[in-house]
Length: 101
Image (cartoon, helix red, strand yellow):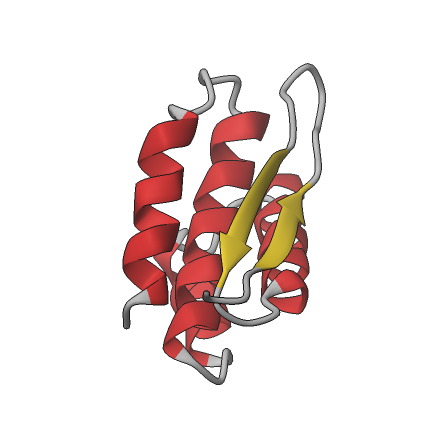
């Protein structure tokens, strides 16, 4: 049986948080991504959005942590921009795919 580590994207505004299970502890990557997305949203947005996403992703030291960063970054943007959260099942499938990498 595979051991799973839970990582939580905290709720914001009226949008619920999200808890995902990864093959390794990815909470620090998730926290970094949430902070990075929040900083970009609070900025004057003169920097292209892809730049903090790619820089933050590349700073993660494993494939699972890179994917966790991407998921958390994009989820935080979606939460803050007021879109409906993505279906939980789709995110669970994505996390399961990351666990096989």
